[in-house]
Amino acid sequence: MIKDKKPVIAFDLHGVVFRPDYKEIARIIFAAPQKYKLFLSLLDPRFIIMMSSLIKKIAVPEEYIMKLSCAVPYLKKYVQPGIALANAQKPQIETVKLIHQLKDQNIDLFVFSNIGERTYEQLVKKFPDIMGLFKGALVTSAQDNYIKKPHPQIFKKFAEQCHQDLNNLIFIDNKRKNIHAALQYGIDGIYFKNPHQLKEELIRRNLISTAL
Image (cartoon, rainbow, N blue to C red; front, side, top):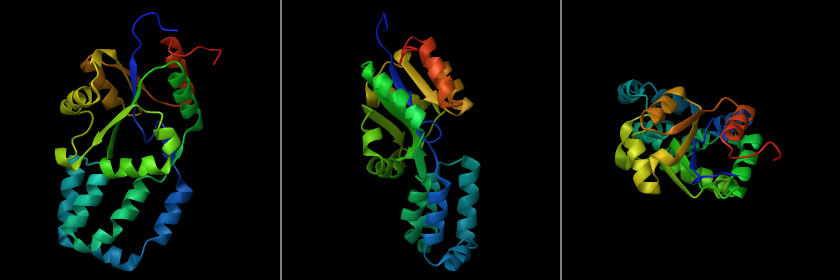
């Protein structure tokens, strides 16, 4: 379908491939152990100081979870529920259909997300069929102090780790600032609003046809 070299496509995850599952969120919160002690832990000065620092940085969810559990040892028991909350998601079925259509066109698909490594690993286990559609992934990590999009370094790391030419990349994300950053580096970006709008953008780029 594509006359020239086929591009590769990188998808953000939360908000694009998946959306919040509020029933699961409620279940996880209800099942959390000793909620009153958790509340008291949140009043710990160490928690407040660390939280203020993370808010100022605009940290990713996994960074909150891991760093706060180190600052307040009692919170370590809430690491797994915290990761589960971050992954309280369900597939956007229409987006997944588009991913299958792109896969059928032999287009290489990647994950390019601000979720952390532990969060990503759990999501792979939770949705192996969907995550198995992607050739590779770059997510934020503790080793890099959770550097995330739209930081220039993370785009460079994606190119190096996934062995891709950024000029041959189409990046799909639901945050405008990430798309604006991508465009600055010569990346074709699609700002995701909903699956129907994404389908129209993919048709316009001749990546799928109206017949699919």
